[in-house]
Image (tube, rainbow, N blue to C red; front, top):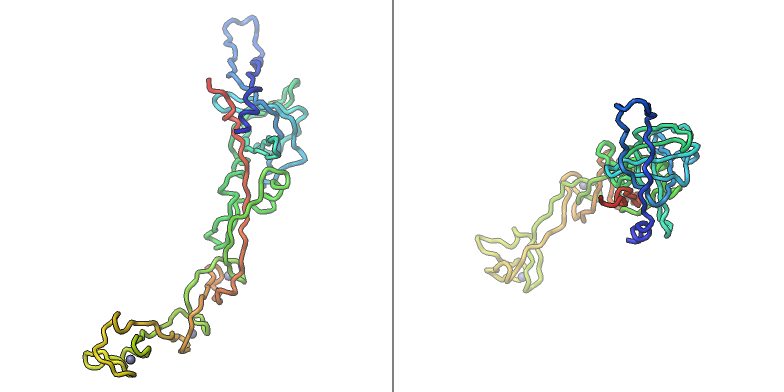
Length: 300
Ligand SMILES: [Zn+2]
Ligand SMILES: [Zn+2]
Ligand SMILES: [Zn+2]
């Protein structure tokens, strides 16, 4: 993969940071705080805080933030001149040479102000930010309470992430929905007059030799099958005749010679309507190109 080729040669181990704790040099009994070995992620990141409603806090973004990673997956960001963060969720961006923005959610576990390096944030891949980027939230799915297709977040929130390149809009599907409420309907063959599915159709006999089509009762006489038109006797099914579906009759409104049509009924508002009156709804979702910072940590 292109990314690996680009990043691997520059991967360097970061010099070990000094221990946080100020040690009393006179006390020989105090153990030194051993920091886990860290790897400096080879690129700097753009960091965007996630508001509690899931929208990006773009005005508080930070560009060029270095990332250190420990082997057990802890991430450390040092953010100079960091603002007061209104959240513990971040989304980190990495821009590839081809313009693709790779993104990951970072769940903040601790924040500590330091004089030299600014705000030291530790966290892990995950949290609310990762939720926003997950395929389950970004693909419209049937919400069984409203019988409508919904995304995991309000589209205007996801659009804000799309506007800054964290998400890409994608076509998902087209579905037929209720013209009144956009609910999902069920479909059946029904009467074009009243919409009822209570239809009956008579089974008819088609005599091959003379092409007559008629009611079964008109063909059957005392155990024999006789064509009422050409009077041929002892007709045998399949070789002399076959059964064909006759015209439908609606048992609810008594319409005859019915050509059934597709009838829809909304599962949300119960509106029953000819299927051709359904609205076509285009389902659009979003896609995130995921960044897995831990994949860059060399195996030890
Ligand atoms: Zn009817
Ligand atoms: Zn006949
Ligand atoms: Zn409806």
